[in-house]
Every structure is written in structure tokens, then in C-alpha cells.
Length: 219
Image 1 (cartoon, rainbow, N blue to C red):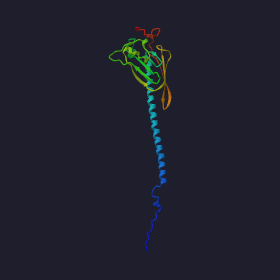
Image 2: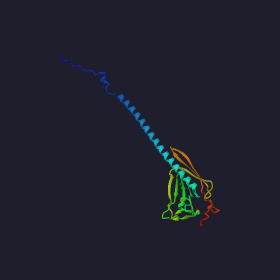
Image 3: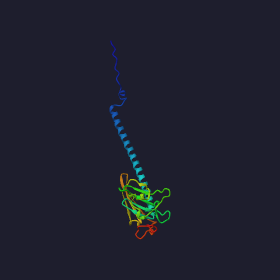
Image 4: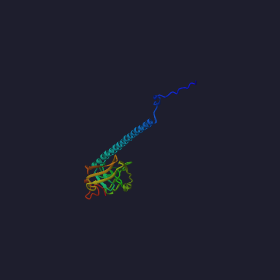
């Protein structure tokens, strides 16, 4: 009689020793959900950090600009000129000659689009620092100083803003109070800032009756 070998049956433990297709799909779905959540969280944290950094940088710009402009206006002798896009101040009589020298003159400029705040001054080289008549001071955009063979140096205080406005209690050179307002976008929202300063060292005693020249000037 021929011997027929017996077929060994798999035990239940052997049949379930690996993952089934359904289990693998479930694991993949769970992993995808977890990875998506992690990626979303990482993006949110990165965006929050970027927003915080941008806001901190702009707040630092505003603080510096407020200090710089406030001190400039408070200590100046006269607000010499005000135009649609800028105003000029005689910041001090450094050499005490009763005249406005180029090294003593400064501009606050906002541009034709009112979209920035720049501080502008005249660099002096080789001791060349001519005096300028009050009546000759004009708008920044006209480059009037080129007639004196002078160049101008501009420093960005707030490089990107909007709706910059200058206002004065009375027109130069009788101005005693200056206000500057501007909008700045922080965290995707526009916020308005305002800088106010009074002229404490006003040199009105040096003006003629018409306010067109200094009494010590040779116009």
C-alpha cells in the first residue's frame, strides 16, 4: 500500500504573522494624517516667527524714527521750508555766525508717493560749507542745492510705509509745531503712527519782519 504524505495545515498563528493589506492601508492613512499635521504646525510656527520678526523690525524703525525726528525738530532753529513732499530745517547754528550753512541744513522727505520717510543732509568735504539764503531753500525734488556745487546724502528712516502726512501749526519759517503721520503694515494690518514735536530752540529773533530772510543775512 502506497503511503500518501499528509499535508501540513498552517496554524492560525502562521496565517496572521504579517500585516494584511487593510492594516497597511490604515497605517499609511494614519501616518499621512500625522505628517500633514506636523507639516501644518511647522508652517504655522515658521509664519508666526516671520511675522514676529517683521513686526519687531518695523517697531524698531518707528522708535528710531520718532527719536530722530523729534530731536531734530525740538533742537532746530527754524523750519525753513515746507512743500508737498518734504520740509527743511535749520537744525542748529553750529558755528554761531547767524547764517544757515549747508552742514546745518536737513530735510525730512516722504517722496511723491508719500510712501517712505528719509532723512537728508549735506555731506561736507574739504571744509567747503557755504551759507545759503533762507529764500533760496526749495523743495527736495528740485535739486536746488546743485547750484551751490553741493550733493545730498539720504538715509532711510522708514523705507516702506504709506499715506505720509506733514502738518504744521503755521507755515515756515514761523512754525513752532510739527506733526508727521504715516501708515505701516504690521502682521498684514495697517497701523497708523504719529510723531509730534515742538520747536524749543526757535530762532525767530533772527528773522526779518516778512520772514523771508535772516537779519544777519546779506540778501
